Amino acid sequence: MARRVTVLGTGYLGTTHAACMAELGFDVLGVDVDAARIAALADGQLPFYEPGLEASLERGVRSGRLRFTTSFQEAADFGDVHFCCVGTPQRSGSSGADLSQLDGCIEALAPLLSRPCLIVGKSTVPAGTAARLAELLARLAPAGTDAELAWNPEFLREGHAVTDTLRPERIVVGVRSARAEAILREVYAEPLAAGVPFVVTDFATAELVKVAANAFLATKISFINAMAEVCEAVGADVASLAESLSYDHRIGGAGMRPGLGFGGGCLPKDIRAFGTWAAELGAGEAVSFLAEMDTINTRRRTRMVELASELAGGSLEGRNVGILGLAFKPDSDDIRDSPALDVAMGMHRLGARVTAFDPAAMDRARQAHPELEYASSALSAATDADVLLVLTEWPEFRQVDPEVIGKAVARRNIADGRHLLDPALWRAAGWTYRALGRPAEAAF
Ligand code: UGA
Image 1 (spheres, helix red, strand yellow):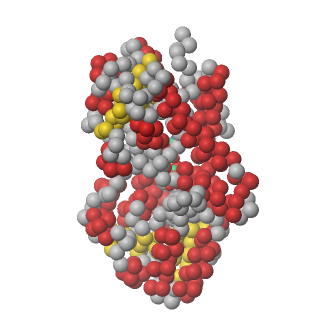
Image 2 (cartoon, helix red, strand yellow):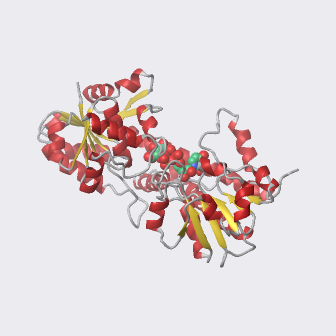
Image 3 (cartoon, protein in one colour):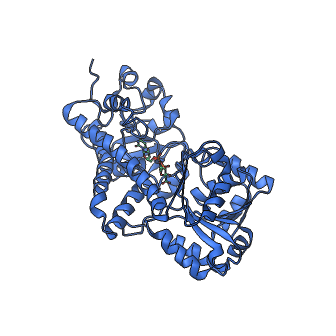
């Protein structure tokens, strides 16, 4: 029975996976080259915000089932199964994926593997990567064919990382032997017993499932945002349109909320990387539509700045703008490719005095953009604002009282980038309420 698991790379994915594996009863060793991060994790401290994860990390560390190290030798000696969870970010100056951390991880681990084990890649990669890494492993590992590779993409969402890992909607494994499949069935015995679908396939398909899923999600969001643009042209309301579409079970409403569009560390970089490697493999035409999805998505950000400018009377120069939300989505402190931050910076560049508040992402935002002003609450971000913008749909912003905050602002103008608020309520309190894809006035 494979009881000893290592998790290589303790970023978002790796830390979550390590803590959840410990929850499932495995002895887990988390490995990273970043000594400061490893020391913090060993102390039960989570270096980012994710609901429920710190408690899970603490439980694992306290029980002794979850430990951390910077030593690949220790990992090689310890693990029956090695999960490789390092990042594959966008290559700087290119739309392709940077696989250097992944290659580095296999190159460091493989020569130390002298006993039977399974290396399981979880990172998001171009198709063909697993086959290439399997060759590398075969060349470098003293254990020979006893050190085998499998591919098991991860579908967790930030803000829901723990539940998505413990109870995923599906588990997909790309394997080349019955032995690899059997080990992964053992590792995931608990979710499988709970009825989670298990798809066994080849390397290339397993790699592709992940990017195809993210490409579909991005397309769904850009589709409804494209409809928002058409709505604006014809005076229709994208909120009612989206609701009406959602009742068709073939379309569904999940993941099709109109607004400011997608951001974060995954969807934008994954559709760009997909386009790049598909073109390299001769299938570029098949996914050329993804470039258009990307364009529709970034146009949301420009359009939001224009809407704020309209509300400010035609120019943002010298205007006070209050911003509610900086994270790329609620329940996260992640600001990577955050639409909210992009809009904030766009307005700052046009001469606005931008004051922002976010329940979790303040420290990261302040570090990345010290040129913006930061407030300690929604109310103080709104103080003296000529325009107020909601850019991340934190549930607490829905509770904001338009009367109370109305007394703090200079002018009652609000642009709701996430369709979070009830327009009738805000208009009744004397606000000019605007949202992308929705009429400027109530129909009646
Ligand atoms: C995404 C996928 O949903 C996960 O399945 C995948 O595992 C993950 O990427 C990854 O590749 O690691 P995540 O980036 O956490 O997860 O966020 P999502 O919940 O998909 O949201 C992405 C962006 O789209 C956010 O900026 C969100 O505000 C926006 N969005 C989402 C919309 O604008 N409308 C929607 O209806 C849904």
